[in-house]
Image (spheres, rainbow, N blue to C red):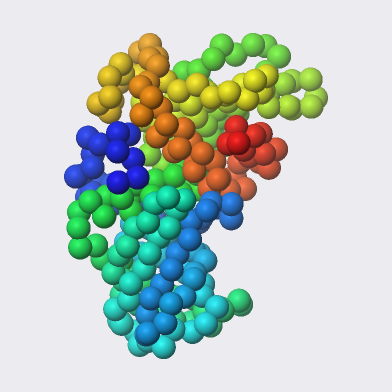
Length: 250
């Protein structure tokens, strides 16, 4: 699985994840997810148009020689991870730059299905973050800063503190998914990871609870979730803020 520790208590609860990830999401242009489709005796490298828990739409350069409802194979490749699934071709239509293929997914193994839903998490989080009013837990807010808050799927929240000197320069941020937090400061470009619970078992805790440092394995996965979510943020998060967050991905 992609996240061995971060979502381990929910690894078998795919139905809940499927309900939560039922919408179609746009993949960020910088997100390094590659899709390979095998259909009609050919192999096609695809660009994702949209993706959901049940299927996806991709653009391929050449038209697959298949009929509707034909069975195909698809591979999702993300850095060192690869997930393979069966797919049913719903349609193949001409597009501006190639052919648009609509695919419904099927998985033989529950663990493979879980890995796919975990892959979908940062796409859903990043693409759904929109600005909202209100505060939340986080670093002390000084009078010289404005606080911008963005809410997204899976109880995700992005908060950015910007200077009030007319430049609106981002200085600090906090990224939260459920009980986990990533914080960064412009002064050192370092990332700190915290949790609302003091062990490796993910479960809900009150936002007023103290924060705890996480273990090394869990910390790496939380940072990975932040990095992939940041690469999927859309225009609802302004360019200057997305650019600021991406300086922490190096």
